Amino acid sequence: MTDDSIASEKWRPDTQEGGTAELPGAPGDVQEAVEALLDEVGVDTQPEPYLEASGLRGQIAIVTGGSSGIGRAVVLDLARAGADVAFCFLDDGAQSRLDAQSVARELRHLEVRCFFQACDVRESSEVKAFVRGAHETLGNIHILVNNAGIGRDRALWHMADHEWEAVVRTNLDGAFFFTRAVAPYLRAQEYGKIVNVASVHGVRSEFGLCNYAASKAGLIGLTKSAAVELGPRNINVNAVAPGYIRTTRLTDGVSPEVLDHAREESVLGRLGDPQDVSSTIMFLVSEAARHITGAVIPVDGGYLL
Ligand code: NDP
Image: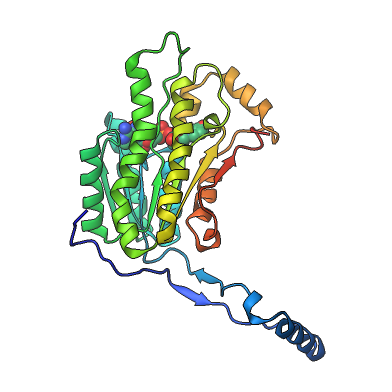
């Protein structure tokens, strides 16, 4: 990519270097003994100073499918942490537009900058245009959350071509298109965090999910490959694998019997909330997770155990 607008300067989050900690309340001789021990251990074996990011102020995040459910929770948490946020949605009806406008309003109340636009993640050209628009409006991109996803469940011997394609193209191609489009920005600044929203069904399938399970297993493969290729430029790529999460997609589209079964299968005996997934994503985009990459973190109440 030869885009002159991509800054090639290294970027680091606002940091506070941790020095040698004073032991609060420790008597002088204990403090001295600890310092003597530290001297003995030697500087070489000490960890690198921990660079603690003070929130996400100054960072710019893109969230796909940010107008509802898990994506909406992530958009709002990123903004509460101070990040400026760009989010896309499909725009498949009036409700979809109302949802997006309502999230944008909430972002304005949180006093962060915002860019939102309909963008079909299945279309590579739309994805490129969205990322260019987000960059021109907000600036360099630091965080990408590939969240947009759908399901079209059916026994595989009845599954139509269009049902297979819609799911695989949204859940897998979409994440690839976005990752490829933001990679030049993240690589140039040698900093970035990517989180893919996979699913427990990318690890263990159930009846009627061949398209969904294949797409999410593929997304886990993409996560690991991207982690390998982008890691040398200080870019972390991870996935979360939610179990059944109470979003309208789930409560409107899944039968009560399936939800009861999901509760029984979860060790904690309950469904999750969008907030449960979002807080894990917030950890993964923070400096506290700087040494985690290529990981798939279940957020499933123990469903996979
Ligand atoms: P929702 O249906 O609530 O939200 C989906 C979001 O993705 C909406 O903003 C929707 O926009 C957008 N979207 C859908 N298709 C496209 C597309 N082609 N291009 C751009 N945006 C699109 O879903 P959830 O919050 O439940 O799910 C979010 C993610 O979490 C998905 O990847 C899903 O597979 C995953 N997941 C969900 C679980 C659950 O139990 N809810 C469990 C495990 C994983 P619009 O409203 O305009 O259509």
